[in-house]
Length: 279
Image 1 (cartoon, one colour):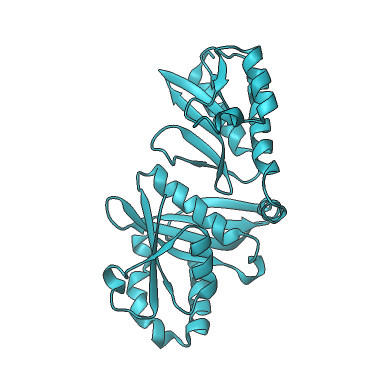
Image 2 (cartoon, helix red, strand yellow; image 1 turned 90 degrees about the horizontal axis):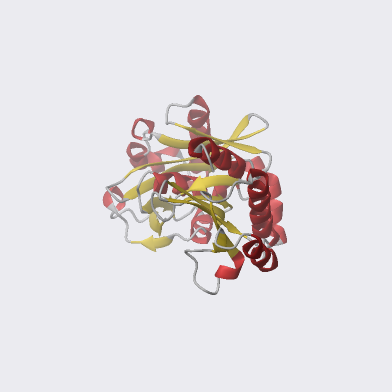
């Protein structure tokens, strides 16, 4: 395709236009992956010497497209044999039909969503109303949601003085990577991370308004934070949660986090549970 930069931007924009889609880079700088609820439907490599896109596809259509464009559309180059019938790689230097390319992106997205459970589809439908904004620790909506989070923690744990030792670890001036979620313009959820070391970030200040819970909002915020951290070169997420916060503990466990010995400032704090996840 001519004018690679414009086409690359058009592909990125089109992938992100799909409900619940966000960018991630789980394999390094390239390929650029587009995910829905943690699952990949498209992988774009915009490098000049490897200008390709790999798309999820139903096996019958995948085979048909390879027959129509031999050598231009091939089995997913990166996939193990068992997965290859479900993925096609398109050589964008040799493929010029943008309308058909976008049709294949639509089909990749639909192929992924069709495999979701009813519960997952319901959560995705709920997320269709949500706008996610990247911001920083001084954002007034983030500040407001953090205040609600502290109030909720005070109620669960039992009075502010019991949490006073944790205040020094939750200062916003050290938090520069924040996501705030909006429902019809109202801030309803948030999460953040900060650098822990060269390879790790620490997940902080995850909160979902009670009216928005049981919709998958917290898990979606976590997925997007992890994707953002991976794009910025980090490989692991760590976090601390309280033993009394059973719902939070279960959410992180479902997201793949495992309990580890209490790290750093939380060592020796019996009320804390520390967890980690490779991203």
